[in-house]
Image 1 (cartoon, rainbow, N blue to C red):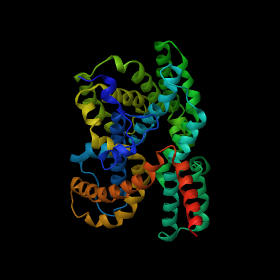
Image 2: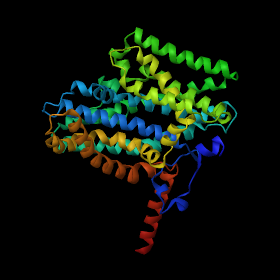
Image 3: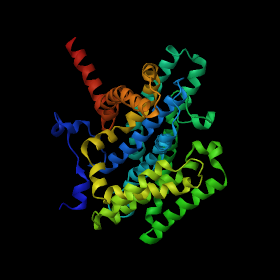
Image 4: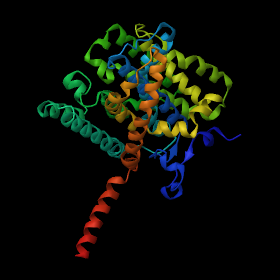
Length: 403
């Protein structure tokens, strides 16, 4: 049986090795390793978000009687809570961004270069993000005839990750980018929060993480922050990022010494439905959910069946494209629903919903795949700005020489 480390982390594949091979669809990691389970968990998160927005379009904008029948109440609740996939993403972000700092402070890796850390955020995330916003604004102006004077301020606020605070509402350019504004706030704060990893006593360190996760959630509920502008900032989601950083601690210090076990599969089997079936009016679930997600992520690493599922190559590949899917799915659903709405011909919610999912999955897949291959994946290469500059300058020199 392979060791936990070699079974979970794949070596970095060079472009020459992956050319002509299915690996060219895999995300490029700056740390030189790939954790397939994490991309598999991204698949779970993005799937729930996409299904949620298809469900919302079906119920709100179809103009047809597609209300959820009583016999599909559980399905309606599950997909109606699909926006909790954003919280799944927040925990993953805490895990990923905490990894380098945890290795540094726990003396398991090299020191994080903060200049490279922040530059990486810019070169990796900004081009796909800005391109998406500009394209959506372009379509809104020319196709939906939105006033230019209305669009430009919203576009500028969105590009600067300030729309949530400036307008106290998600972006009118691309509504899903509200969560990316929260992510950016965590990126900025992560180096400071990660100082908790410097606490040498493992029990004390983990107890502090657990205590902060619990206290922050309880305070938010008592102060009713879900009804304020704070609900669009990291102030309402900090505990999810902390849960991800605690997961990083466990991944680096505990996981290498334990094996997989069927008990974690039982936890997964019971826990994943709970994530999406607990009603929204149970406010205290907001304080419980970070702990549940963290346990389910541990189960994804330590279970037998669920670990195989989340590390499945194609599940992980699709999950690895989640940023492109997240940026483009909402826009794509809005555009193509004008066509697929004519397929709502049944009096059964399950049939209508299934048809919409199948019909919209094709354009979402095509648009997202193009965005990933042409824009996002090239930007995963930390050296792409230098390579692009060299290409442009060398081409210019060659052109001048030719004349």
